[in-house]
Length: 231
Image 1 (spheres, rainbow, N blue to C red):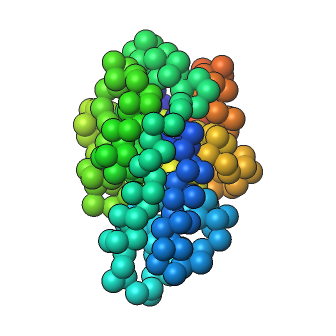
Image 2 (tube, helix red, strand yellow):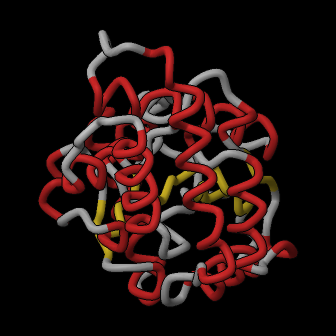
């Protein structure tokens, strides 16, 4: 018999903050600066990986990596001017507050760099609801590796058996699966429900508000699927 849910881990970009397409544009411009013509659709589907993974995913593992650091820096420089315009997705603040008020540990587990995370935290303005926060700087590998989620569990004192992860990308789903954490998928990052389900998401909702409106159902269905797969 499973333990009750005592904590919820959240991705941030595309899950709580409407930033995925800004990242895609910034990466597209950065690639063009270094003579890489990468279609925007491919970039969008790679968002959710950290910078340690996204270049190999989009340029190939055998690409000339001599410009990687400069390319990553270019993305950061192109994305940073958008920080003041970032907005929470519908219901994001209320979702985090509601989880915290229910006594659940609320943990942000993102592949964003620390400077980007600071901008996201300013956008969300829900520090009092948070138990812990992690970023790409806290892990040796970003999603779909589970390192960031492992750090999130350690910092919050949670175990995988009593935790749910909420994310918007297939990389979130894969990272959670490596720790046997059920993942609730949101389509607010631009992926369709079918794709997230095909990759193993336990349940799908449109955005944070939709998840909030069905929170009890979501937590229950996620754990039912987890138990069924474990059995």
